[in-house]
Length: 127
Image (cartoon, rainbow, N blue to C red; front, side):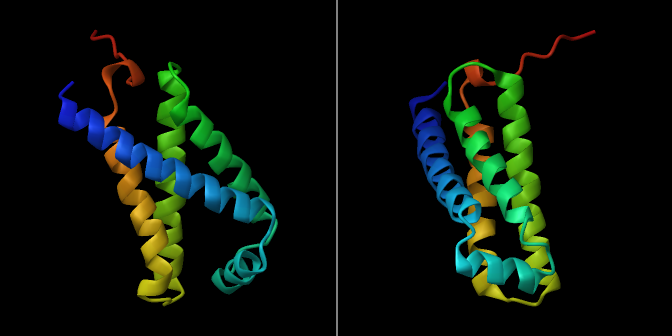
C-alpha cells in the first residue's frame, strides 16, 4: 500500500468515525433537534435509538483490527444509512442544509472503504 493511500485511509476513517460516533450519540440520547428532524422526515422517533446503536457499533467495527467481514457489513450499513438520509431529505425538499451532513459522511464512507489496507479487506476465493 502506498503511503499516500494509507494517509488518505486514516484521514477518511478518522473523520468518518468521529462523524458517525457523534451523530450516533446524539441519536441515542434523542437530542431535541434529532427528534424534530425525524418527525419532519416522517420517521418514528424510536428509530433514533436503533440508528444510534448501529452507528456506534459500526465505528467499533471499522476501527478494530481484523474481522474484515464485519467491516464490510459496517461500511454497507453506513452507506445505506447515509444514502437513505440523503434520499429522505430530498423527498422532504429540505435543500442543501439537510444534505450536507449525510453527503459528507457518505463520501467519507466510500473513501475509507476504497483506501482501506489489505489486512482490512475480505479475501475472496476464486472458483
